[in-house]
Length: 87
Image: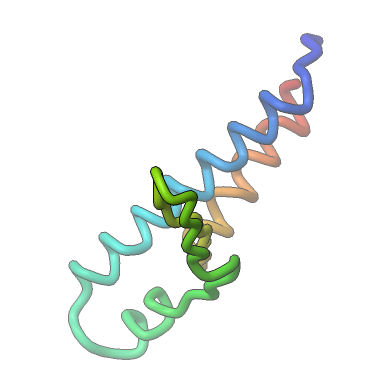
């Protein structure tokens, strides 16, 4: 059994959520109007709004918003199951 560090596992779980989000958005684009599309198009957004920082010479905006849908959750569960049994 291989030992992986926590950072690697967190990175893989984050990638699963991101890829699941893209797949979920693709499904909502491809499905016709109806109950199934409504179910897959629901998402939860969390994070913080943009903060503008002005340092006279440099001005930049910081922000983080995560959009989490049902396919992201399924991808997260599949990857967690994989790590549970094979690592």
